[in-house]
Length: 275
Image (cartoon, rainbow, N blue to C red; front, side, top):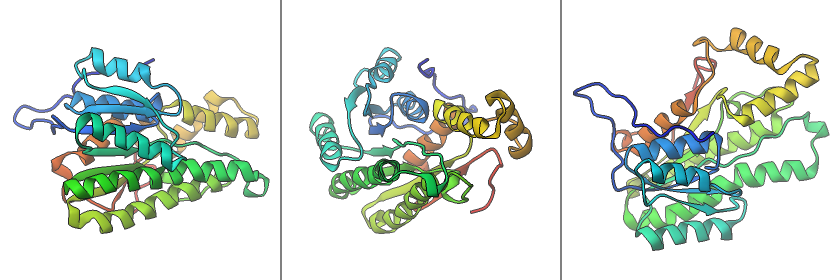
């Protein structure tokens, strides 16, 4: 089901941040967090290029039909520098600029490090950190010329705290956080901010897949594993939503976040409250 396209609510006298006339690319936009991010950016006025290895046409169609007629879809393999360079180049050629780059595409790997295959390790790194490198580098080259821009990377709470059987995924996301910090320092003189979001348990297909693998290894049902985790780990008493992620990214993309750079912001419902 496509995420619902509705402008976020805000209090009278406190207007929501606007992204009117901004041009954005969101990778991994065919579903899950990427779809939610694309919807929120468009709801605030941005034109969004919804990019994915698989078709993101459904996401783009949702945005177009709900009031973002110039939003579009594109195919990209974020592990390929040439593919990402082509995506950024075509976006700039079509729209004249790039204001917001959201490096969201990622894959999840579960298994003890001793059991992870070479192919799974390399693929995880190529997509999760390679994709952030390729996207950030291509965007930075454009944004430095503009002397403005926002780069936002999807990391994870597991990039800050490792768990058994998730070490490869954790390592890839820790690398995203450190690359974000370095980019924030390098690009600040050009009026470019670079930040990462660190989602906890967000209700997505990827989350259910990861919990299903854990539940199977523990010999319990997925439903029981989800409820046990919620009861034990998340003080707010719920899993995160696509809207939660979209709103954080929209704020980081706005002028209101101009003093925030090099940060890795937790979005965990209190599951993780340190650094």
